[in-house]
Length: 115
Image (cartoon, rainbow, N blue to C red):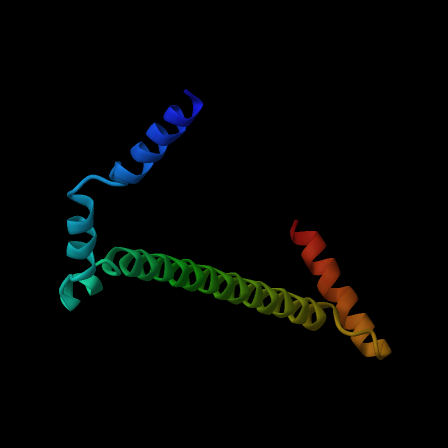
């Protein structure tokens, strides 16, 4: 009886089909596609990569423009601060001589009297 079961399983394994009859036809149909359709499958990933690159460049350009704007504002503030310091130095003198100091005292007293 054991030999009969062994022979039956052997017959089953040699006579059974491994795949359905339509699978070999599908396999050969997909490998014989036209060159145009093979190239089309790269379009969505390529479009995604181009879109991501455009977004990255756009963000970079925006950040560079913002940094340049901040730098220009800082330079303008520095220029204004220097102008105010120069105006104060002109008004109060640089105290390098006695005459400059006396003139600075007169300007200070005149401003103090007005306030």
